[in-house]
Image 1 (cartoon, rainbow, N blue to C red):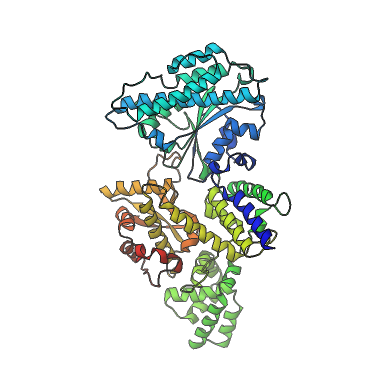
Image 2: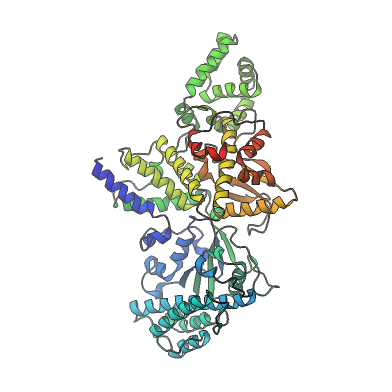
Length: 624
């Protein structure tokens, strides 16, 4: 590949795989849109709460449900649509202005309700303007008297024209936002009843023949940005949705802090009031793998302009544990084991038996002897006498043994390669998956290779480690708790990295944790930290009680650092076994990481041992 060709391919890769946020893709987002498996559930008039971390595709899905999305995905003629959706991204700058200034919560609730009326009515009017400009033959002009009723409900100047109503709404929102910023001293404006103005407009829209039997969806994104009382206001709208007018709400996990409505005796209850769609739990295993492959293959097709292979699985080959052991240099360890057998006086026949073993079986002999502090001769003799028992032991430990082959040496200590591995690392997060694929393909091209060639195991592993490092750095600026979350990930990552490097005599593949509550104030502080960590994908959580409901009500969870960080720290990304930490220990990982790390490791008779790995040297001020 020439430098010019490589440069052009890299540019296309960056354009197609690099625009990872829906906000950056604009119209191209719809060209690359892939329907997730839960899409049919969103099409009914039933309210839905779409829950997932950043990068799980909430915004893309909600935008796909909007009329802008439908005109690209279904066609420009609204008669072919099943519904009409209007999108509103909740802006923190706007909604957080509705607090303080000497104004009580009750008044702020009424002011916020009026603001929601203005915004959602404006979104419907924008749809009407688009409709009149693109499909006049399909859209009989809305009744002028109906527009006047909308104006009366919002206390706007009366008009029977859509363009004049659109202009009046823009002015009203500007004036109202200016008032909100000076609410303590200004005379309050006349307010509308929550929900009524846009319901009036929906009723008028449904009088147009092509919309007579179509539900209207209000698509609210980033619900977690709302204040608690604002969530109660939106909950009231959700609670009292109808088949004609309903809500589809996107939020991060732990973002649904309030389930009450404006009526303190009334709660949002799932499944009676809404469908709860947890993206990470819906898109798991083969479902997510197939969905993600379709997303990547569509983007590859764009890069290759329709030519060449479009199957991402063939570009990202996996590596078996036996192959990986050889690539990591297991032969040197086996030669060392052979020398030890001779030193211990093993017979020629016993050495021949050792040489005839599968490499991973032979390495298990050395691994187990070190763990049990027994001789290699005795351990090998035991294996030869109980092959079935030792096969089970090999099945349990062969993956964890891979982390020890190159312990203390520079370079790759463990491979993270293959489409299935990338799917597991992303844990249902399509943005992380695209980051992994993009980084691997970009490195592949920079190495002078073609997209028709598979990406090497080494390149895939280096790409995975880089994405883990990059997301660790990004945590710092994601939230007010960014510095704390970064220290939490570094502390836990260091603990799991040491455990992976020192598995001898211990339960293999420990990479989860459970928090033991003490009944002290630290429990609440630790809970707040974990909620922020889950919301910003520093960790993922799952109910410890398998019979628990999935609605988020249950407080007892197990946790795992997001698998995206595993290649950076070098420990197992697979969901396996857990350790227990106290609330105080968890908080100490943030307050004073080095002694907290030593304390947690000490409980399992491990120590920091070797020097800080190269990839963690930039964080030595935190970890040492």
